[in-house]
Length: 83
Image 1 (spheres, rainbow, N blue to C red):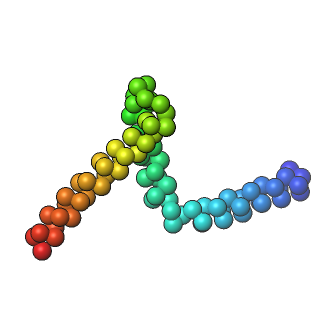
Image 2 (image 1 turned 180 degrees about the horizontal axis):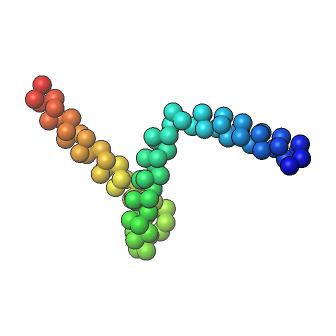
Image 3 (image 1 turned 45 degrees about the horizontal axis):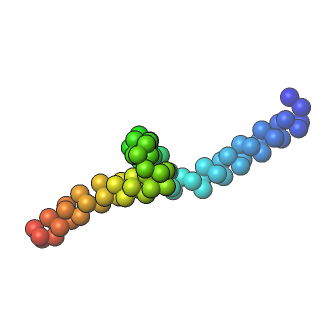
């Protein structure tokens, strides 16, 4: 390898390392968002057969929020009532 290729590989490694260090605190959120997108995409595809894409996206987001938030609210209410 010539010096130019070595420099480019080293530069790519440095920038990749910096990007990873910047994203590391958010890695759990990034993985969770990817998992949610993976799980909710089939729902979006089914709903979008019957309604336009924008409305389908809105419905799927509202459904996802409801499915995630409502059980936590019930659990929080039960905890606060017991305390």
